[in-house]
Length: 181
Image 1 (tube, rainbow, N blue to C red):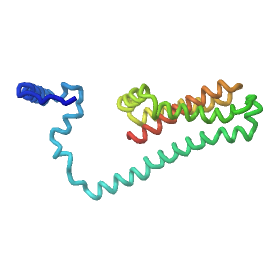
Image 2: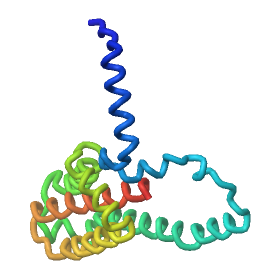
Image 3: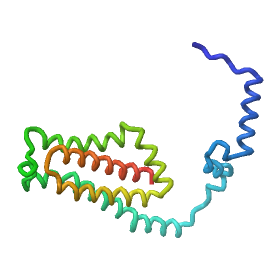
């Protein structure tokens, strides 16, 4: 189905609306858009000494934090294997493929938030803007640690599965925060 070409009156009406939006840059709700009104001011020469200081700060503070957090998430993923060696399957009375399901349920929680579910993406993005990425990650890591401790009190498959799903969700929040930081 071919689209009709806009008439001159439609083009003029659209250009008038654009002119009105430029008079009131926050009319569409995007306050940050005003920053790009003078985009030439954004492109400035960076002092080499200041750049070296910035890179040094990133290397000293940000990169170790990312590495430590990724190490903790790796250890969390390996914890189930360690627990199985020390008798988790007997203590919680896991039968058949329930042990395998515990690992899969973690991944279901992770991928549900990160890839499949848009309902969690927007609140997470809003929270990272409202509270800063550092505070959002701190809260998630704190809750994640509490859930990890609660795993020690589980006595059946269903409680372990529910907590593993929540752990997967919390780890996906931290992963998406790294990419948006």
